[in-house]
Amino acid sequence: MAVERIPSGFLTGLRAGDVTPGTVQVVEVDGRSLCIGLTEDGEWGAIDNVCTHDGGVLGEGELDDNAVECPRHGGRFDLFTGRVLALPPVRPVRAYETRVEGDDVVVEL
Amino acid sequence: MPVEHRVDVLLIGGGVASVRCARTLRRRKFAGSILIVGDEAVLPYNRPPLSKELLRGDVGLELIAAEPASWYERQRVDLLTDAPVASLDPDARLATMGDGSTIRFSQCLLATGAEPRRLTIPGAEHALTLRTFADAEAIRRAAASGRRAVVVGGGFIGVEVAASLAALGVEVTVHELAPALWGGVLGTTLSAWAVGVLNESGITVRLGEAVSSLDDVRADLMVTGVGVTPRVALAEAAGLAVDDGVVADAGRRTSAPGIFAAGDVARVDGRRVEHWHAAREGGEAAALAMLGELLPEPRAPWVYSEFAGHLLDVVGWAPTFDDELPLLGGHVVAYLVGRRVEQLAIIDSAVSVDAARTLVAGSPSPADVERLAS
Image 1 (cartoon, one colour):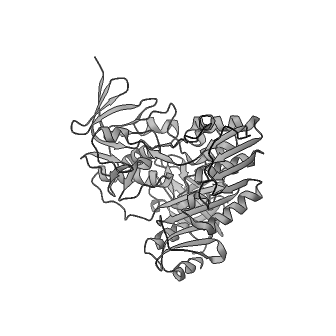
Image 2 (cartoon, rainbow over the protein chains, first blue to last red; image 1 turned 90 degrees about the vertical axis):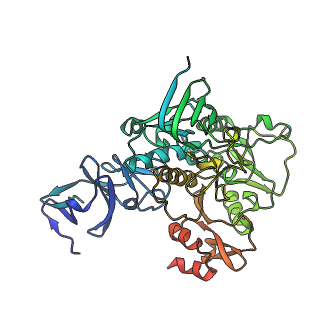
């Protein structure tokens, strides 16, 4: 799928209805692997997809409130800031502003 | 008159199994009341960091909490800390607390965990053990002013504690009774690698030597890590089937209807796996069974350890094996029963641990394991 740069960000290829509230999923944007999520409260967020502890795939983990949980060892990151919320990781991941434009999910890289 | 409470689901034990059970119940839209009772004074927390990040640095409890403090209110999960259960009546579905109050429940999870075995040799009373947050803090305090440490027991906890103490600049000697680390259950190949890693960190490892006394040991700090005993007293007194743990099936159902068991205290289908993953998966399985939902396919056991900058994953189950075979340049060790691989040790995520876990459940050949690399 061609990734399109639109004036205000990158199209993720996801439509707003593609993601179930309270879940995260993996999406590739401009060669970067992201963990993109939609909270139960309807807020979108995206962080780098790779856990800084041992490379776990965050987009295959669980989302609870704003916390993304790595499926490997249970490390948790804030979906909106990338901050570590639970060990074992100690280094944060990068976070990307995410929003819906029209029906498209767009991230700022 | 003593207070009587009534809940739909009572989770006994303030650890990961209970929290994971509650979390799964709520994620599955269970609307009934949930109460966790634990006998520690703090919020339920993950124990793996106790021997690692928490020993090495000043990490607050909030970073190891199983769920943040706000979660309990948000998810309507009640929590009683510092609240030991005195007895359990499975027929009446009634728990009596240490303070005499009673809790009636519809379903109950026993997740009372395990406690460190204590050595009975002279001087052992001066040694510390590691199980709780408070234990970890005590070891860290002693390490801050100590120069020499002796660790008795070269199992998962002993190896991790030794590596963390060495990272703090403490001179450490590890004593393991068996001729190989981990009591020999992971063979000699992996042990030889780990001894090398520990030696490089400045740790002295003594294998195959019994420690007969700790009285004459010249050390500022002694830690014993010689295994744990499941805390089965409550279950035993309640008349549940107990055999090195509370006997449970894949749905963590015990011999008493409505009573489930998970985590370190549970012996599930003949195996008691003392590990964080097993506690989480056990809590989740119990929640599904409580709801009458389909259980996931059982997966091979998975434990991990982390020391001196290395990550070790062990998947599968081979308490005894016929042969151990280094594969993939020595980064994976296969444990063979007959000609089939029943367990794999993986160093530093050399192959996908999840894929290895799936593969090993089917008793693969060594060649199948080699193919994991691609």
